[in-house]
Length: 320
Image (cartoon, rainbow, N blue to C red; front, top):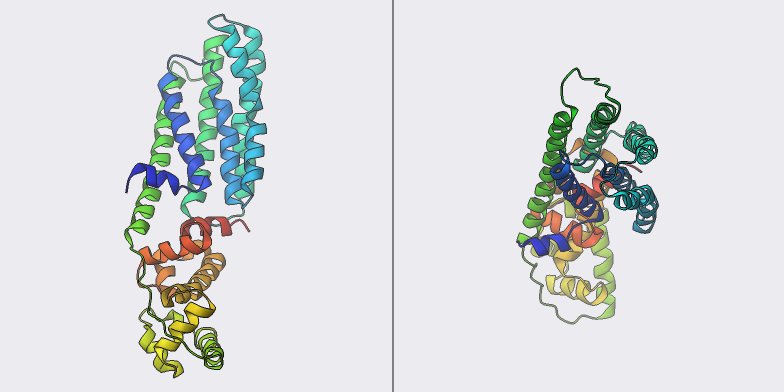
C-alpha cells in the first residue's frame, strides 16, 4: 500500500499522532540551539485533542478547542519573531509560567480523567505514556531555564538538555511505533479483495416475506451468524428455503449480498463484545467469537460499517 493511500485512511486520532510526531522531530532538531522558541506550547492542545477524540467528542468540538488552545503559541511565537536575536527578559517572565502551566496542566488533567479507565488499547496506552513522559520532560525543561537564565544548577553539572533529548527519543519511538502498527493494520485490511455477489432470481412477495421472517429467526434466535463456516447452502438447508430465494430477498429487500448481510449481525455482536469487555479480548479473538474466519475480513467489514477499525472503536468505547 502506498503512503498516499494510507494517509487517506487515517482517523482523526491518527492524524493528530502524525502531527505530533512531525512537531517533535522538528523540536528535537532545534533542541540544542534554541531554547526560546515556544514549541512546548503546541503539545498540550494536541494531547487534549487526542483525549477528546478517545472520549468521542465531535471533530468540530476538537478543532474548536485545538484552535483556542493554540492562542498562547501564536502570541508568543509572534513576540519571539519580533524580538529576533534580541534578548528580552520580559519575554521569559511571561513565557516561562505559561509554558510551565501548559506542560504540566494538560498532562495532569488528562491523567486524572484517565485514572478510572481500565482500557489497555493502543490509543489509550499511548496517550497515558505520553502524559507521564511529558511531565518528566517538563521538569528538565524547567531546569534548563533555571540554569541558562538564572544560573541555578539543580542537576549538579548534568546537562538537562541531554535528558530532554533522551526523553524525546523515547517519545518519538512510541509515536512512530504506533503509526507503524496502524499502517500494518490498514495494509492487512486493504489486502482483502471485494466479496463476490450471489446471483439472484425473481420471487413472489408472499414468499419473500416468509423468507425475511425465517432469516431473522435464524440470526436472532438461532444465532447462526456465529458459525464462521455458515454458507448460503447451509443456511438454506436450515430454514428450508431455496438459496436463490434467499439471495433475491437480500438483494431486493435489503440491497445487500449474502456476505454483507451476514456481516451486519457479526459486526453488531462484535461491537457488543468490544463495548462490554474492552481490552479483555484481543481483536483476533473478537473476530472469531463473532463468526469471522479471519482478522483481516473482520477489520474490512467493521471499517466499512462503523467507520473505524475495531481497535479504535474499542478505545472510544472505553470512555463511555
